[in-house]
Image 1 (cartoon, helix red, strand yellow):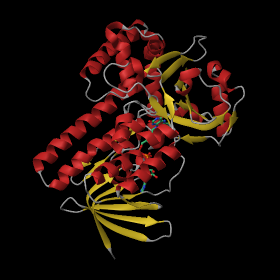
Image 2 (cartoon, protein in one colour):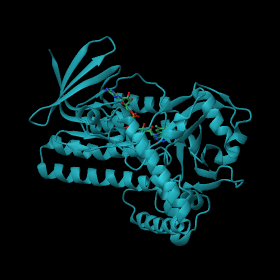
Image 3 (cartoon, helix red, strand yellow):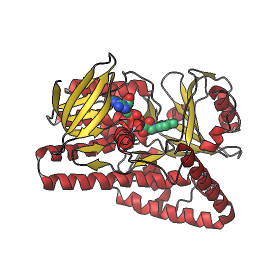
Image 4 (cartoon, helix red, strand yellow):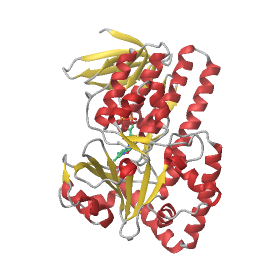
Length: 435
Ligand SMILES: Cc1cc2nc3c(=O)[nH]c(=O)nc-3n(C[C@H](O)[C@H](O)[C@H](O)COP(=O)(O)OP(=O)(O)OC[C@H]3O[C@@H](n4cnc5c(N)ncnc54)[C@H](O)[C@@H]3O)c2cc1C
């Protein structure tokens, strides 16, 4: 049995894995990336954040992404069935230095582009190659077994291992570290449509979010005629489905007049797909000779389009950890590890606070009619832009927003409490069903 040696082995060729692999390879390390599928392939998660742009620039692909993307100047929010028009948040109004726009992308094109960029950088790429077993060695290296589409088994020994396997959560699952999220549970039904009415002029690329009783709907305009549409709902509500996925999705959209109005000439471009409850985290994110990046560590909810950005930014920070580990300097490694854990948790926790409360009556009222005391609206826009790691001015103002939210919650405490109880009962039920 031949065991190939490599400095770093990355499991998974999505945004997290390719970002990690390319940036580390650019620092001269030998990097191997194993991807169980073959690009281009469909993936959900098409709306990027402005803070993705500097990372894409550092990867050297910003101009290529510009060619496949639709410029996204902001996000609009509508309370369904309210008769009120949408409230638009423009990224140009954010505090600080985040870019004034982002892109909406087809993930088949975006992920393929990132993948080929890794290949061009000199990463050893193997597609159709699924990692099946990982065994840690005493010196912190890892033995990795993978099987290709011809049924041939391959072996590697990697000085450092990166789990970027997305919602497959390879290491977490294999080691029993995966935990259901105790505060949140939701699932989604989604598809691509043509002929959906877009917003006017420069707002054409904005993501639209519609609240309804059991969840919320997204509309993400892609290049050409396509609109990505999905409904994110409580697992309980999804279990009430009797019709096909396509029919159920259309029925949910039809229940929100403001969204349905844009669908009058729409037709489906692909069969609808569904995901079950996807809200989880891992008991650990880093250890001797390994790291988890992107969804392999945690995923909460797609409402703020934060997944790809959190994946790529965690990968970028993770490169410093791998470099420190490979350098053999304990001090450098301890420092890089602390920074990785602190910032990764900070990003997730800032988004989580909003996500956990997103469907509450207090939050929908505040987001559709925000009180702009002390520039809190600009801070919320900075959060929507992904500026969550190091901008103190944003973090301070988000604290003010949280205070305003708490006051709004208390002023309507009966409704708020009933909503929270119902939500937590739903979470407990979803987590029991998953056991
Ligand atoms: C319904 C829904 C809507 C979403 N909408 C958005 C959005 O609008 N914007 C946004 O930013 N995010 C969104 N997300 C989240 C986003 O899709 C993810 O956060 C993002 O793709 C994470 O990137 P990743 O590289 O960590 O994982 P992935 O993109 O999932 O990549 C993981 C890769 O690993 C490969 N792999 C897995 N197991 C193995 C194995 N054993 N061996 C080899 N390869 C393996 C997979 O084939 C895959 O290519 C959404 C998610 C959901 C569920």
